[in-house]
Image (cartoon, rainbow, N blue to C red):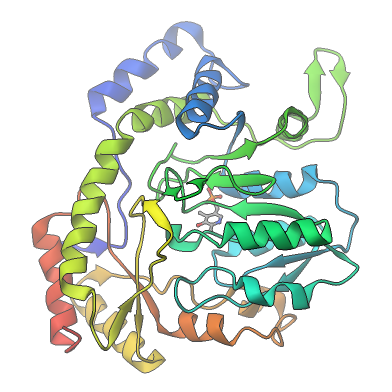
Length: 368
Ligand SMILES: *Cc1c(COP(=O)(O)O)cnc(C)c1O
């Protein structure tokens, strides 16, 4: 049997990509903020209706450099979530900042805004929530808390590209929002990422940080890294942006099939927020009754060559690279979700046959 993975990168039509990269053989201009880099930055800003976007080599570097751009004093505390991909936490620690883990809500897995204020200390400088699985945080409450305590808000929006809520699109919240355009994300540039910049000052700072601070042949104005998006990636992005609505539509059909089987069940709960008016259907997370049941379903899927994932388990705060440093964080809901969660396969080209294989394993496990 052919294996089914949790995701499969979207591919634009081969001819489309090949046609568009042809001019590079004339220009030999492969990177350093070229024509396509510029075009994608502009098109994305227009698509998301935001003032400016800064394209980067990855979502992770986007997060890391955005935190750096805010110039927080070393050792400052960032209130964040452990129920996320490890990148979120690494970005904080690699900036010599301290992650303070806030619990999440069992309804949708996003940061529990009622538990933020008790974590604020004189050292707190920012909140870094995650729109996990594309479930959008309670951005209004978080903005209120941030304003009351003069904190910045940076959203890890890696899962939320193209999503809309009743109060605006997912790119527009906080002081900055960061996207990942990794090959496994709904919209991708092979590797890549971007930061939504509300001010031109942030855009400028990020420009320096992603390009060694170089502003002229003989002028380096600040210390920076290399996190530029290359032209091939930008072209992949242009191809994928044009077909984004098609991608979403195909994913929606897969989501609808799952929903028909999985919604309103007793022993399996779909982890989905209620405040979203346009989803991107990037993930299909389900919560089982307990860890042993979760692990049993995982094993049954494996036996059938279906590679569901335990995203996000373990919690980032529990990872061995932190050697128990954050073990005492008061995060019972995050812990419980992480022990019971499975993300089911969902991707643009998922066939009905593949879907029925996943469903039939769930039936074998007596969940449906
Ligand atoms: C994918 C992802 C990142 C990192 O993005 P890369 O492009 O892989 O560097 C960060 N945060 C979350 C929540 C992610 O899912």
